[in-house]
Length: 64
Image 1 (cartoon, rainbow, N blue to C red):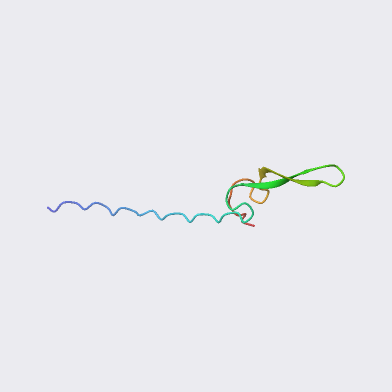
Image 2 (image 1 turned 60 degrees about the vertical axis):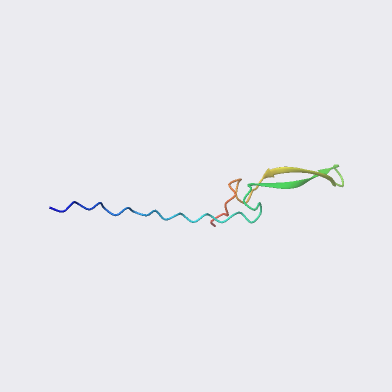
């Protein structure tokens, strides 16, 4: 009696990576210039980071 064959192993296909967000380049954060002054709102040389509102910090492009 011949030996039983092993079942063929199933190959997993890699899921495609989601597209990166066009606004934050996949970081999830954007930099904003700091503005001072109530009347004129002068822009300074300083920057602050903030959450990307397009992808809500995930770094993935929105589907809609």
